[in-house]
Length: 126
Image (cartoon, rainbow, N blue to C red; front, side, top):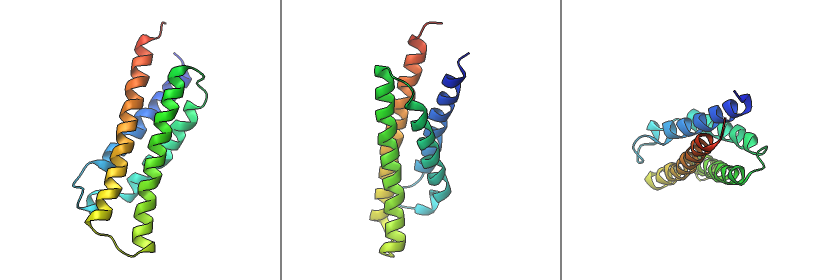
């Protein structure tokens, strides 16, 4: 068993599930989306990105790209939330939809990353 693959797979899947946990819920009701879960999703996504830096294959490049997309979108989501709450002191349905939409894009990138990771794992020889 390759412990590096186990750890990287763990963080890829954890990043996806945390992102889904934040994304799931009504896009109009921000109270259904935990700021702590968004923070955890960002941290775990960044850890997953670090794991992807070591892979020098073509698949590794695609995995890194999907992870960077997820990182950027989650950080943008948190930035919009912080700017709306503390900068403009305005949290309405439009801002809430933007926060949730950005995390949805990150979720799609995470799903793509996990699908590629599983495909690569199934393809590899023992």
